[in-house]
Amino acid sequence: MIPAIALRQSSFLETCPITAAVEALANAGGVDERGAIFTKREVVDFILDLCGYTADRPLHQLRVLEPSFGGGDFLLPAIDRLLSAWRSSGKPGDPLNTLKGCIRAVELHRGTFTRTHAAVIARLVGEGIAARAATALVDEWLVFGDFLLADLDEGFDLVIGNPPYVRQELIPDVLMAEYRARYSTIYDRADLYVPFIERSLRLLAPRGVLGFICADRWMKNRYGARLRSLVADGYHLRAYIDMTDTPAFHTDVVAYPAITVIARENGAATRIAHRPAIDSVSLGRLAKCFAAKNLPDSAEDVREISAVTAGEEPWILDSSDQMQLLRRLERDFPALEDTGCKVGIGVATGADKAFIGPYEALDVEDDRKLPLVMTRDIQTGRVEWRGSGVINPFNDGPGSGLVNLDDYPRMKRYLEARKADIAGRHVAQKSPANWYRTIDRITPSLASRPKLLIPDIKGQAQIVFEDGKLYPHHNLYFVTSDEWDLKALQAVLLSAVTKLFVASYSTKMRGGFLRFQAQYLRRIRLPKWSDVPDALRRDLRDAAEALDTAACDHAVFRLYKLTPAERAAIGGNSA
Image: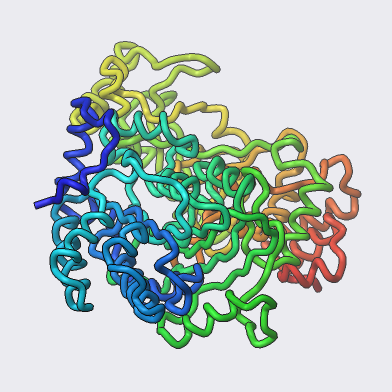
């Protein structure tokens, strides 16, 4: 049974559609549906230490918020520290009156709330607090409801936790609309943890601190731009700890987690660590390094960088020398697409088995199919086409729509034989009359245009020249240019300079792989082709033709006029 005092939802929730949506989430069965990930105790203690919530302080005078307490991974250790500090201070006052304002913790899942409510009462009783007082105290502390909608006072000294990782499409539309109306940081495809962070920050008291472990993609991706701006405008990113590939949770996670400590204060420097060992001794030592007024000389695994946050700009959390170089290049050179280059992505069909097959075997009219280049065709660094083709259902020319299937009887017969697969796609259901369109429009002239092809996910840059015979598949990004020589541009994109741009702005995948997506490629800075001397043009082309990355680096470092210190900062081949 959920205590009545815990039902602190906003009065507007009496309206039926939103109430029904909240109820659906409250009764969701699986952990995946709820976005629940359970954090190890060593990591929880580390975050509490980083935020200064330690038992040697008068914690009974502070207010703590846990926005999604789940099974109590953060809540119970925080309570343990609170009680320890209270005992050390001589237990001033009775526990109910003294401690009732110290904690607010919110949970939406009904079964989880009930179990954790009972567990907290048991913990308090075990610490010598009378059952009646323990129950009343827990009823004050725990709030059953949706954190993004619940009535909560401001002025928390600490907000801690692991917010739920839930994609927008899993949230009922009526609820998502209400979230968007309330939270300005929900932008593009932002996941639910983004408004969780926004509300948590806004609930902080002056000098209050937020300590979260959650996915790090908002720090660099497009959908995190507004949240990054919010942090830059009124908060200080005190600490960032990359937790990718560390056993920080009780189960493996797909997300790429990081610990962030953000305070409602002015400040410039951010302390940074990467992938610490997950044991209490190592994390305890690391927490002391982060807490020290001056960074100890022994803290070799902790760096300090200034000016990480800058409006909506992605956060660069690597070395200070690399950040200075990146900012210099951004100041001195135009963006890639301002130099006559264009970045795009290949065609997504939504039903590759229907639209794609061996080119010669596609039984459609000759002008209704195009030779298709796929990731597997460029694995050697050069194009080795394996004979795939894609069906083109569009008329040629800009602004043209789909062809009339009756004008192409072979294509009509071919597609109608596969209509069950094609018409079941979301894009087809939105417009049943256009059931045979591919998700992306196909523009045949792209096939005949020379281009550079770039796979989405790679450990290193793999930039392949294609001389204008093939149409790219959707796992490939492409770059065309009306000004730059593409062979010379290939050398630039194969170089350590490009890797610096992509690594700085993209989120790393497991195993250290980078995503060479359009949004990151467009951040690359490039001189105008007209400003490149003839001798350097030849060197760039020769290096690319040989696929010699050392020669590419050497020529590209000259192109950007890198100093010896900048070459050392960027790494790569400088011979």
